[in-house]
Length: 114
Image (cartoon, rainbow, N blue to C red; front, side, top):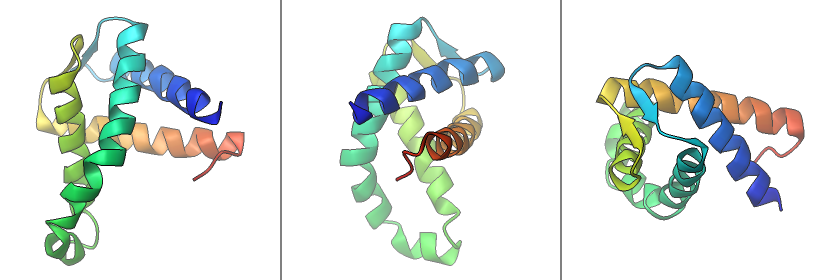
């Protein structure tokens, strides 16, 4: 049940962010739910492998390279999900920062922090 709530909150946040950022296009709410599910799967399955390889760069940049990795995950998600489009790398980076901060805030307020 907790996972379903987290996915729905993420889908709502994705829809809201798409209204704010002009470079993010989402067709409908079901697409946002699909984006939330695909992002969760990519973060669970692919991100640990992607974080492992550039570990020296991540350490050298004091963790800021993780922002680049998050943007790449967003771009990868836009490649897999029809109806979800991100126009550039920089828009993907801003999208991932806003999504991460808003998720952290909402999950903290709900008492579901990681």
